[in-house]
Length: 552
Image 1: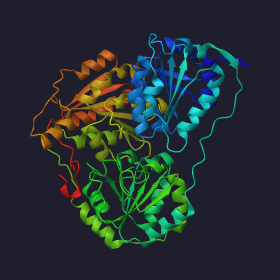
Image 2: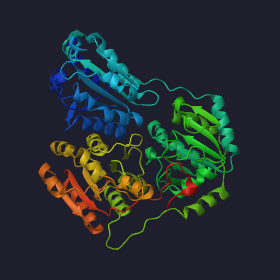
Image 3: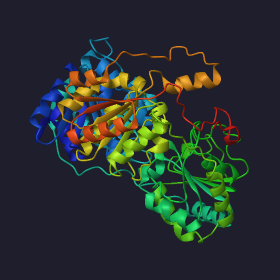
Image 4: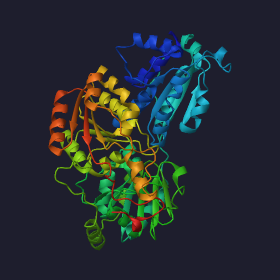
């Protein structure tokens, strides 16, 4: 059948089982939006307040579901407004297809109105990008975009479509849903060698990251830990992969991780790194992070091997497939003395104290976790509140803790919350943010109100840029340059102006009452939780230092 480019685009999305996209219209994509109008019974479009919010929403949707997130924007500023969201997804290996319009092919290169070379701009932050010059190429390009976004290590792909391509007509033939490339199989020799090293270890420690989550290897990981009796610690991207009740789970590692987690890795004789990249927030001093242990690195991306930390053995492949091959080769083991030492270190893990009449961050996070339950989804922005959420939210389910780890994008949280809540209307979504991050994208509150998304934003308000101030306190002689905000924002009135509901809490009892009422209302809400500006994220390993220099 003959269809125009816009119809082919929508048919291509339906072919890939896309039923929800996020975006913002403009001149270069008017034909596409006209087609969306005709297909509105098959694809839901969520109109955000800003293209960056749409990109973060597609990202949050993808993280919460494991599906490919789709975002649509017009040419020029519409396309460039996606860049931060695309980079955020790229750093955290999130599958996304970003579709941008552009000026007609005859106008490209002439500095036409709202023209920008978005393919060139986004080249470093996408797995691949396409400029579609002919309508006959569009269907194949869209199929290729979805294949690339999902294959191997996931990530964003950009498709730029000139306006005349969206109106030109050609023959269209529907095809089956595209399948991601088959995973590269780990070599039998590397798996066998890994088993030998693990079986010989007396003090093994497992360090796992977001690759376990992406692969869906939670059960295999737990089976391995149980079989070899090894303690495990995780990066920020892997929160929720292991239940916090698991005895072998030491929790978060790195700059703000637990002392026992850092000690376990530093004093092990074998570190089994699974689906992690040893970022500078984990291996704060790459040369001293692992003292004398041998390292097995299991990862789907060969480019990560020996990039930050030198390993003794690499196993290249999908985490789930590798662990399935490895498990039968592992001998059941008991490491009683090693685990006894771990338990001794646990006694010295940092434990925050309650202070009568003072609302403290750990209490805020705990109250949120209690209110939303295990099935709730926590989405954070970036800063102190992000680390407190990672430390104390105790997520027990995969894909229930969404945060910008690699890029560290302030303003990520509200858009991502829209994506998560759109994906799971019946689950409670808690958007945990700070006053600095919240002001960056608070305009998206109008989106949740429009679509009646019952997102509850909890703003930990300390009237400062908390994490930067903490560094200024620790390393810059308390010279608080441009980190004291003192915004006059009235969050209760702000919520009311947007059509939401606002609360203010200065005590734990007030916070618990506000949370209960907010979720009972089933509408967008803001809760301002007032905390002291001198609250710190502890423990903390200073940059370039090790667990031996931890600040408690």
